[in-house]
Length: 436
Image (cartoon, rainbow, N blue to C red):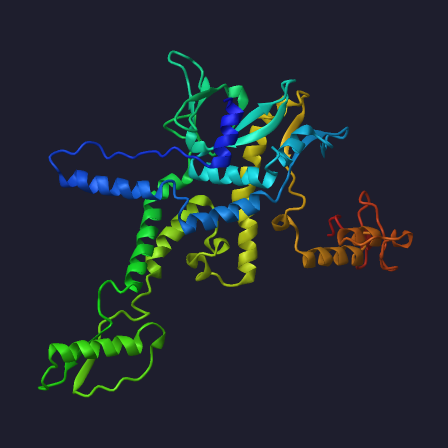
């Protein structure tokens, strides 16, 4: 089975090789090892953090924002201005990497793989002519860049193990997109979520604790006890009272009245809704995880952001800030990587590069009210024609609109001539002249 068949088969089946975490060998049953082993088992259970609702919410925000801008191949025109190269094969391949995917899924794979593992790998399936026919995402946890012993190359091959059997792939056949650089291994990117695994674990524990509390934790909801010096019921009577209580108030029959024949005192020992409020336990994980991923908590629908939000205007400002400080730098990084690692597959002409077309990204568009205000101000002050103002707001101007609206009492003076002002007793002098 070839590399692409193996990659295609493993992608379709979703097979994954589990990475085992080891706490080392026990030393005489030491408490340190037992504690360490327990923590390692917990970290193994959460894996790379993809099962966390906080992580998933943030990754969805990142994915939706990143996929909004398409890629474009650019070059400079005769005037030295950047212009889009029309119908370029690289753009077509990114938009449709293979028969089963679109660019949306391609970039979703990039976002999730780089944030969870630090790297995203794509296998280049070639035609008989040696051209790239398809791009196939590889599971990042099954790929490892390697160098041969004694080699001076940073990467000699990529070790791909979809089912435990190694397949060595040459670097020329892999598109490797990194997120940052791992300081301990320069072949790899750096997954931001790996530094907050403990916070993810803490949120998981808070979730389990809440579920355990709601399941009653083996604590009775109420205690029925004799009041004062009243004689307590016998076992048979106590069992009857218990069964009657459960029958009357169990499941959906809560709130119905119950009349006890004896002098009984009812004591509540269960938690009230206020006492069950554990939201503060989850605020720190929400803040740190969203902070590491560069996603404002409110955009991911997290309580840490919703509570501190002051309204729609702040949310709109956060969307713009999020796009500018998180998404745009990522677009630029990937644009540069595609320029050097993928563009030469089709285009070796100098002066061309890959970037993301942000012209239709909603978060980067000027507010419509602001556009109308600027257009109206420009027309009223006479430095925009009516036609130019209409174009700014998306209206089609007519021949009659190619005019300036200027007051008849306003005089146009060339910038090379200093305007005059009257000076008492001395006639008119230039504004810049020294008046004694």
